Length: 176
Image (cartoon, rainbow, N blue to C red; front, side):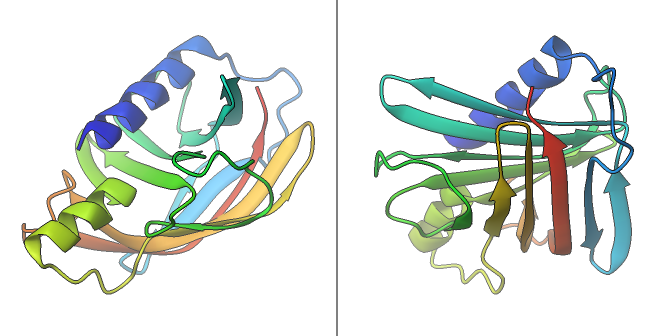
């Protein structure tokens, strides 16, 4: 659960430290279906890469505004434990080379998926029907595109009864 806290912390830092780009392309977005209902974040969408001591991380954030802390979709990929780079390709919650974490918060209710949730599921003997998966389809120095989907659990609790299925997730973000 430490990594879920980390992604929430990173999302808050990224939201609060970055201003909306002046040349904002209205096409920057994070969109998806939550249990079949269309959801969209277009007001404040960004990507951030970081490299520290050979470790790479990537954060994608979609929010309604740069100052909102309770309505956003974010995900995070790092190269721990594999130390490989983060390039276009598929990343999922059972990878042995990368960790993936995601948080969807709406009206201060948190939904989580990713590596730590999958590890909890193994520990508690819970089957996750739709494993979290993110695919980076393209990335250059300025922008990144991709898709994502999976089962999200309220507060990351795989033993709880509240689960949400996110499908048709797409992102297009500008690096900050």
